[in-house]
Length: 117
Figure 1 (cartoon, rainbow, N blue to C red):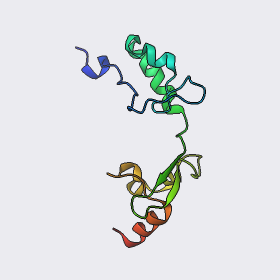
Figure 2 (spheres, rainbow, N blue to C red; figure 1 turned 90 degrees about the horizontal axis):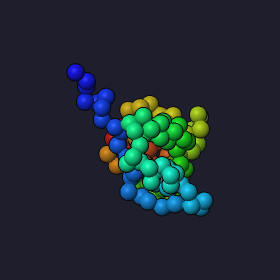
Figure 3 (cartoon, one colour; figure 1 turned 90 degrees about the vertical axis):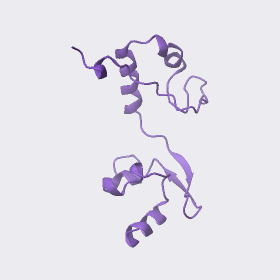
């Protein structure tokens, strides 16, 4: 008997932020090409997995964010030692990626780490 997870195709990468980049060929939300978006429902499980692998291999987009704690602007997605976001260099338990809210700026995160709260 086959396991259900082996038969279930990957979900759509769509995040509901559907805007085209300047080229008019790539969605800035999910980062799929127009061809991938149009063909998604007819893709096989393997084709969907290939799209996901391509998407996961892309570098994270750099975003301008506003710290929810202090209101200051900062850059998310750059500044890390391996080319990713600066917060990826933190121990996993301190990284905002597991948090229940958006990222803090480096200054507020540093304050939180020092205070322990």
